[in-house]
Image (tube, rainbow, N blue to C red):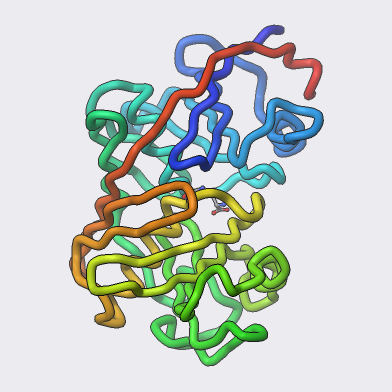
Length: 269
Ligand SMILES: N[C@@H](CCC[C@H](N)C(=O)O)C(=O)O
């Protein structure tokens, strides 16, 4: 069976989008998602995005990391899919329902309310998620936030000085995080700007992580280091994040369609 795909990205965080709303495609499995996402032998992407019909919202978005793991949220893909859809929509995800509004060249996404309880991150045991008494090499005193997926955030003097390709996987796989974790290293430049690099769970270093930007901004606001809105500058570009305690997070930024193509399902199944 031939399956159409759309290659998209949000600030260089790239996706293969499969749209099963109008035309059925065979059941997705983690191994198939990983084969499609493989940059050497597949189409290649950070995340595979599968759009399906939904009874609870306008449509459903399923998210598979490059390693095939299915996860609850992807901020950059939410903007890309909003742009593809072309009008305001409610999107059901495993991490909650999102409201998206396309803008010129991108979208604003209501990402829902962040969660801070240790068992909602989840962590393996109870601790204060605003200031965690743990550390890895030069990284210490992190915070944790769940924005539909789990994030740990470290504030550092210089994000580029952190060997995230080496420490990222160590933190991601630490038993403290039973569902693994996305690892954010951030520098506060001033009260309106944060610099951020992210080691993504199941995908490694990416050019940008939308949920990482949301989690980092919220954590910096909880620590009273920045104000809302804040600009988060990632290697691939900038996002604007707005939040106030008790409310939901709003993320605004660009999204891009790169090209369209098709592949033979059996090649990856
Ligand atoms: N790139 C995404 C996040 C994708 C999922 C993440 N790697 C996880 O495992 O939770 C974003 O833009 O938020």
